[in-house]
Image 1 (cartoon, rainbow, N blue to C red):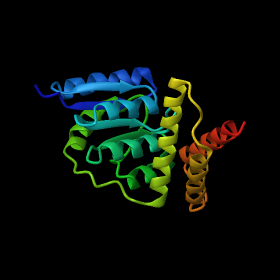
Image 2 (cartoon, rainbow, N blue to C red):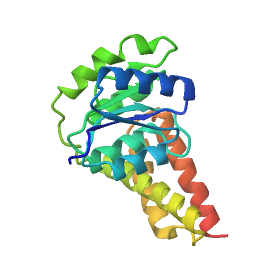
Image 3 (cartoon, rainbow, N blue to C red):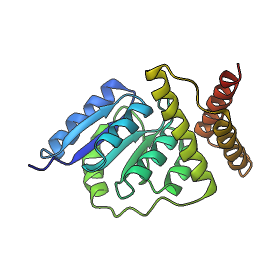
Image 4 (tube, rainbow, N blue to C red):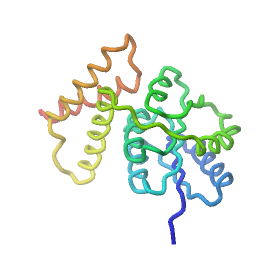
Length: 202
C-alpha cells in the first residue's frame, strides 16, 4: 500500500497552524497533514516525508531556524515541492521569490479565508530548481549548522567545528555586503552563528 501524499504546515502560531491544518484536511481529504511549530522540527518532518511531500505552507518568522533557511533546506530535500510562504514582513519576500517559493501571503488573522484556493493553485504549479548562487549555498550551510546543533543538543555531543561556523559566517557576510539593508532573518542567522562560534571557543 502506497503512503498518502503529505502537506506540511510550519507555523509557531498554534491557533493559526491548527486552522490551516483543518483547512488543508478539508481541501485535500486524501492527503496527510503534518504541522511543526518551529523551523528545525519542520525540516525534520520534511526529511522524514520527503518522498510523499507535495506542498509546504511556511511561516517566515519562526523560532530556532527562520523561514528563509527552512525554505532552502526543504527546496534542497524536495526540489519540486511548492512552498507557499506567509509573512507580515514584505522585506523578506524578494529573497523567498528568488529561492523559488511561490508568491508569499501576507500573514494576518483572516488569512485562512483564501489558502484553500491558493493551496490548489500551488499544487498545480511547476517549481523551478533551487538557484545555485553563493548566497543560497551560504543559507544552506547555515541551516545545516543549525540542524547539526539541534542533533548535537539531542545527543549531548560537542559543538560544531569552528571552521564550518567561520565559513558560513564568511558567506553570510558576503551576502549582507550586497544589500544596504539585508533581510532580518539573514542578520539573525549571522548572529546565531557568531554566538555558536563564541561557544565553540570557550
